[in-house]
Amino acid sequence: MTSLQTELASLERRISEVVAANQRIADEIEVLESVRGVGTLTAATLRVFVPELGTLTRQQVAALVGVAPINRDSGGKTGRRFIEGGREKARQSLYMAALAATRWNTIVKARYAHLVAKGKKPKVALVACMRKLLIHLNSLMRSHLDGPTMAAPAES
Image (tube, rainbow, N blue to C red; front, side, top):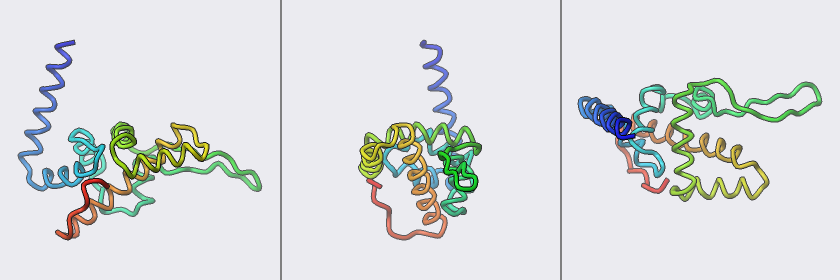
């Protein structure tokens, strides 16, 4: 167990070194980390695996990561929605961030509780929160890339 902890600490130290070496990347990761539930590892993962973040529309970024609902309809039949494809590592990292956000981010927490109260399965509600979180991160990055404006609230 201690060898895994040592390796994890080494990887986290290496990520910090790489981020510190490039001020632009450090600024972008800081913007992503400003959202409660998104930590350094998630921010770095999204920055690496989704470099287009901030340049795409909300539908495009959701489809790119693989959290956009895809229908299974044919004629008059309406099937269940599902997610598939996309960038797996980014989606996995976003899953953990959404899980933390459902506990610590008031907006995502309220969204999750609302969906579960409506009868959605917890996993389905969590995927919806992943999409909401990703779209919010995309808009924050767009604002950051467009230039300095008013700072985003830390709670969102």
